[in-house]
Image (cartoon, rainbow, N blue to C red; front, side):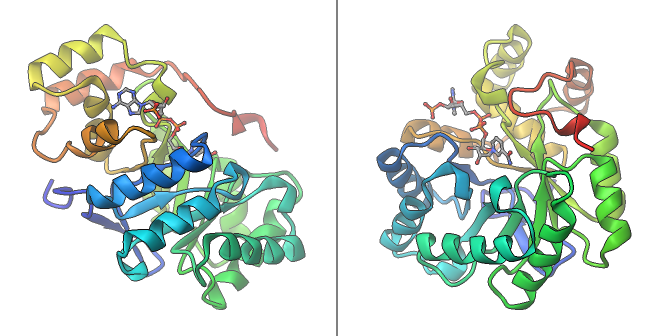
Length: 276
Ligand SMILES: NC(=O)c1ccc[n+]([C@@H]2O[C@H](COP(=O)([O-])OP(=O)(O)OC[C@H]3O[C@@H](n4cnc5c(N)ncnc54)[C@H](OP(=O)(O)O)[C@@H]3O)[C@@H](O)[C@H]2O)c1
C-alpha cells in the first residue's frame, strides 16, 4: 500500500503522466459552490480536479486554481469532450473552448466523456492530435466498456491513459477492471459514494464503526485499495476534508473480501453497457 499515503500519491499511466490518486469531482457543483469547493480542496492538499465541458463550471474551476496561487504545474486538471462536440473537427474546437474557459493552455488529461456511436473513433483521432499539440498532456476515455475499448485499441496505437467509469462496491465490474489492468489503462472511479445513494447501507456503517471512520471514508478507501483513482464530489469543506482523511487506515483483506460480495450492478449515472 506504499503508493497511497496522501492525496498526492499518484499512479503512473502509460502516457508519461502520473495521476494523483484522489481528486475532487465537481459535477452538479453550482458556479459559486464550485469555486469555493475547488479552493477548499486545494488548500486541504488535493492536487487533482475533475471537471467537464458539460458541467458548465470550467470557468469557476480555472479561477479557483489561479486564485489558489498553487503553481499550475502542481495541479492535475481533467476535463472532458462532450457528446455534442464529438467528431474530429468539432473535438478540436471543443478543447480550445475548454482551455479558454479554464484559463490555461493545457489540461493534464482530456477524456472522451461517453462512447458515442459512430463518433468516438473520430473523436479519438482528434484527441491524438490534441495530445501531440500539447493541449492535453494525456488523453483517455470515460464510460467505455470492454467492447468500446477493444474497438479503440484495434484502430489506434495510442492506448488511453485512463478510463473513468462509475465504480463502487455496489457496481464492482471486475471484468472491466481486469481488462483495463491487462491493457495498462488506469481505472478511475466516478460516483465513488454511489452519488450519496448507498451511504446509509448498514454494512458500511458497521465497518465504519469498527475502523473509527465515516461511511464515506470506507467507500473512498475501498476504491484506493482496489488500485483505482477516486474523485468524490462535495461542495462542503468539512466533507472535502473528511473525504481526504483516508490515508491513516487500511481495510483488512477479510473486510475487502466481504465487500466484494456487495456488487449488485447498481448504477446511479448513465448506462453505457448497451451502446454499440
Ligand atoms: N464521466 C462521467 O460520466 C461522470 C459521471 C458522474 C460523475 N463523474 C465525476 O465523478 C465525480 C463524483 O461523482 P458524483 O458527483 O456523481 O458522486 P459521489 O462523489 O459519489 O457523491 C456525491 C454526493 O455525495 C455527497 N457527499 C460527498 N461527500 C460526502 C460525505 N463525506 N458524507 C456524506 N455525503 C457526502 C455530496 O453532497 P455535497 O456536495 O452536498 O457534500 C453529493 O451529494 C463527479 O463530481 C464528476 O466529477 C463523472
